[in-house]
Image (cartoon, rainbow, N blue to C red):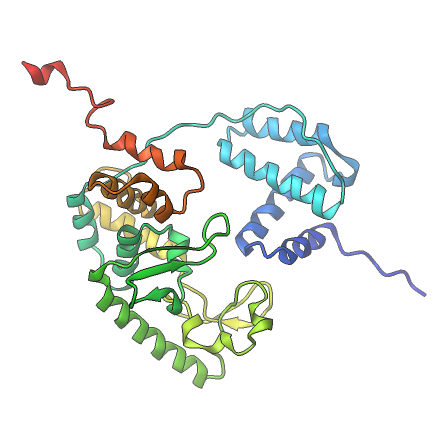
Length: 322
């Protein structure tokens, strides 16, 4: 009998990631870092390497690659995953040069700047940008919204599987109720057309596709902001209508900021920063803001209190006292 060939290393990594229900984006990121690690050591197999090679690689990223601390941590996570879950090898990471963590204050728009920016948007991008600012969502949280996540009766948006794998609720602005109802009507028409064409399935998270086999064709599970075309899912090969690409909103917000003559480096995440800052300005408790943003650590939310201070640390310039 012929010996069954063991799957290639990267295929083993993909399988281990999918078993644990990691996102496709995480899968791509981990695969990329593992490839870079292997090529850095002239295609040596990771099983023949260990602590020294990992620390040398991470040090190289900081010293020669000048990567950010978050990028270096991402590479470390990918390598720990490889050794622990694929190679089944407990490994201790030695001392390595840490990338410097830059402490940056978030870019925040004033209320008038937000109003001017939103006025330069229209259609679907206008609605998405309003959700980022009005409900404090991250870009991908907004794009991944399903029809069923909009709760009109309780005036709230349910963010499923947000950063850290947690669900949370955030307010649904009254101003967006009518536009969102119209958006759902559009989704209903698109979905009906897909069903008539013999399609209509949507990607289902984790094992829900097996648990509820008919749910993938229900309106409630359809993405709130669907793509203009159907596409092949990279994992299953099925034809789905996915959500709109993130670059669509990113480019629209950048263009709107230029049109509104906003000099600050405004982005989609700036709208979320502005949501948090304006809530604190209006007297909302910081713990409440932490919950709405989905921050694990209150210190992450505390950064917005620095933005609130007038001038540098709230100090009045002596020039203004003359």
